[in-house]
Length: 387
Ligand SMILES: Cc1cc2nc3c(=O)[nH]c(=O)nc-3n(C[C@H](O)[C@H](O)[C@H](O)COP(=O)(O)OP(=O)(O)OC[C@H]3O[C@@H](n4cnc5c(N)ncnc54)[C@H](O)[C@@H]3O)c2cc1C
Image (cartoon, rainbow, N blue to C red; front, side):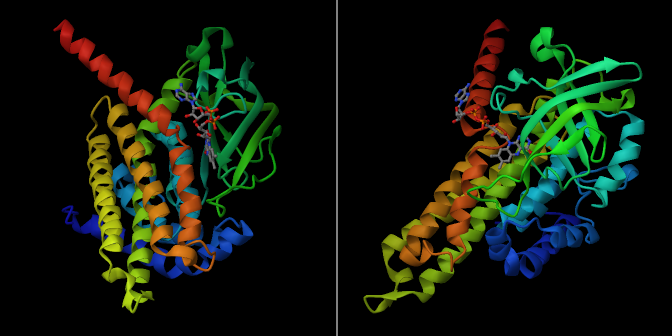
């Protein structure tokens, strides 16, 4: 399908595709096996200037948006989403600064994130606050010219590897969700440490760790926006980044389709390539059709998000929900097309199927995406009735 990409967008896609083919594909199984953070690949992506695609030129970025970022994320994901999430999570960590940060904060932090010199990460989740971010227990208490942060964030992508963290903490717990605020915390700040690296089912190249704050003092200048805006910062950040999860899903599913089609042409049973059996062709046809629908939705939503439209939550949730459900189904079917070989680690679809599951969980589970979409539909219907 032709999505009418500009010349620049085609160049971004081709560059990311080349890096994925040459640098990611050859090492993805080893990174998965060793659970090793892909620093060499991060450096290559930085040298290719891909970290700043969505960051304005005045802060050292390319000046594109979520769409350009999705194009790069999709191509890297086609090879490995353990790698692409390490790349994309830096954007997730940067969005609070980009969307709500002061001019000083943008000038101080965004150029290093845009160049890939410093990775970022986003810390919202806690042991008791997953889907229900309102259950956040981490506190930030105003003290003189700063805030003192105490608490533990759980399962933070790029935890320990990133240098710049945007973190949600309660400045006024009595006010519930209106009592949260967002802060920038740099690696190396006294009182800020990391838990052990988690052992995961998939995306094993990525690093997932706790962020531990014990009387961690940050200056007042590190507050993003103003006190009480924390959950708004988090929700608007997720609105921007969820099409990126959709792009991870589309790339991953495409990688699985590529493998399944190639295998079906080679594998012979009953004297013929299995690709000649209509049952197999139909599976491949459904996989490709569903993923093209996911791609079309993700691209449309990313462009919509970049348009500056005010309320993009519903569309953003739809792109993440639909594409990740497709990726799960497509990767399961890719294993099926490849039979017992697909189940073996010698072939990449085994890893792809394990990797796909996380897409239905992080940045809000798919049940939560359905809640967001359902609530928006009901709100719109109620507003239309009032008119
Ligand atoms: C590998 C990995 C990386 C991650 N990276 C980050 C990161 O970088 N930053 C960060 O802040 N977080 C991160 N997370 C956390 C992730 O966003 C949460 O795991 C996710 O939001 C779900 O929270 P939970 O796991 O506590 O599940 P729970 O909220 O406990 O949910 C358990 C089940 O109940 C369902 N459920 C809960 N509430 C409802 C409801 N109201 N309606 C319907 N169903 C509901 C859920 O859908 C799910 O099926 C990461 C998680 C993982 C596993």
